[in-house]
Length: 474
Image 1 (cartoon, rainbow, N blue to C red):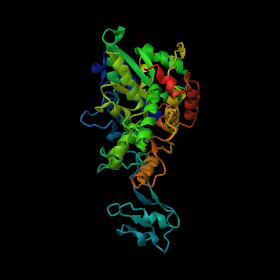
Image 2: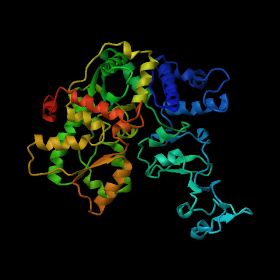
Image 3: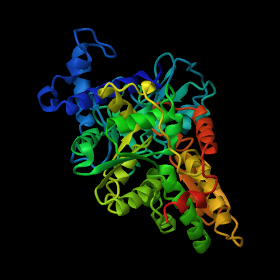
Image 4: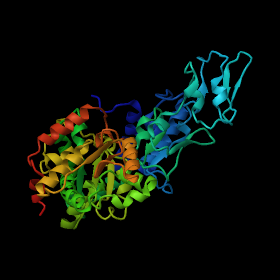
């Protein structure tokens, strides 16, 4: 039964599962130090050079599983002790160097960083190299390569750099907390903080609904996850854990599509506000464009606001694929409505921490959002929904010209053009993760099949129009 893409995800899951299990049993404090030994018993390492290093790394993962560094506002952190297997980053001259006479690489180097040994083989002085790449571009043998680390390759906004200890570090001023580095690091040296203990605490205190009721707001991308079970069984599993009600964030997406279509027609140009990583990127890298960000709350916050306004004793937990949502819930505009956020990875750990086999459960239903709200999960879905919103609101004198940005690189390109007034669009749909939310770092699985599953889930919606879906909210 395949639940995860990689063994790194599985290791992270085991840590989360054990932390959650101890928390349910009220034994976390007394067993906190021994969790690494519980996960890796005996003296045989499973993924590292020795069991002692493996347990030391697991100990750092446990710290992140219980909330991480409280002084660090970023939800993404580097585990330094685990970040020592990658080669030094930067340009290197490989064995393909033939010691040619032209020495084009030497001629173009602006810092004199390239020298030759007695065999005429080139070498790069790392102290002088500024990594401009000119040498690599002129080498006729393609013998010069840029050995960027996987985390640096994954981070398209250059928020990751290599520190003096040769470990990865994150520039919090640039980082948008999308989690791309978390998923791509092959050694599990970068991890998102977990607030799973807060969720368990809420669920325990809400037993029998005496204090409050906990609502689970699930992202529409859940339709592409937990592929070993049926979606209705996942819903039943959430209720078995202790959630009072399970609500589709897609219903909030319907609310956003309706409101955003009217806002767009009124203002003439907008950038979407659904993806917190995209919004943070605009504010940090393109502050002059911030005035164009839609004033609507995200689908998560919109439906949570609705729940809180109608149920005084409600607590809301968002469950989705996004690490950046963990920061969004702390924003002043959002924290009154959402009490915590967790990923699909963490939900799987939560199920298994209570030994709940969701495949053995009866199916429950999620049936209150429209097709358009559900397809928000994949790139292009938001624009389709906004176009539908314009139609349903009878706005015939405004034509949507959407720029659909699939991944943060496309977002950057669109924002650069908009900044220079050369973008041929009046709406920028920004999704930081490739593929949209279905490519989020907190997904159990990633891939093209996820888009197919989301579209299938959308077609199964009982409500075919946005207005029909949100009519029950009025």
